[in-house]
Image (cartoon, rainbow, N blue to C red):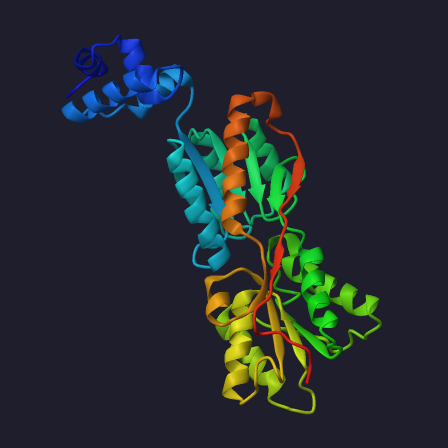
Length: 336
């Protein structure tokens, strides 16, 4: 098996220089780095992460905890996290964290505590005070995505303000009979996303002087969920609204499919707006509020790696609000 000494000898440099060139730590000229990398490739040398860990105290590995893998927002976050970490030479270990259960306790008590991670990223998981304390005891950076966690640097959009903006867009077009189709208020996502988006809707409607009575329909955060809600909501023309604010783009797409099936024209007879920036939005010409999950993931990685270089920032609580933006397409217009 090739060793770092073989790489150094072939490249004509000292072992320490070869080590710096391959690890990326410490200054090495671009010309020397290229010679060392070429020599390593020629003899098939692969740096040992365990050996590097003994020298640097780091494992080049980050633990990621997440409640869902198959849902669009979370899969976008995961893919961007992996790409960003790999680009910086870091590995990622994923834990699909269930709700409070024995399995969740094992993740915190055993896997995260006993496995050596350089840091932990929590995606869409509302950590308890005890769980935050456990992670802080590791002395490693911890960053959250999705909502505010006391004692943790977190990155999130303002769900209330975003929902209000979506509703105000419909109001600005002249709609007054507007319905919000969103998540069940009992079966909540972490960080009360369902409630916050309903709160933003209600605030916009009340500010415009409109009633919010009977203004909400609950469904699953999926295309089928929106489709089923749409059939129930649009089936009776006497109670059909002129516009709908959907809590997610997937719900909005389901609503559009249901409307088309019932012969309702979009947007002349019904306007629909969502939240996300899902790829389906472009295909269905859906007006939406983009929340940029990939950008949120890159921000989390940047902060985590920065905290590794400045250990004094570990445990610092800060909420970074990610701006959202309105993208207008042909699913919304003035009411007929």
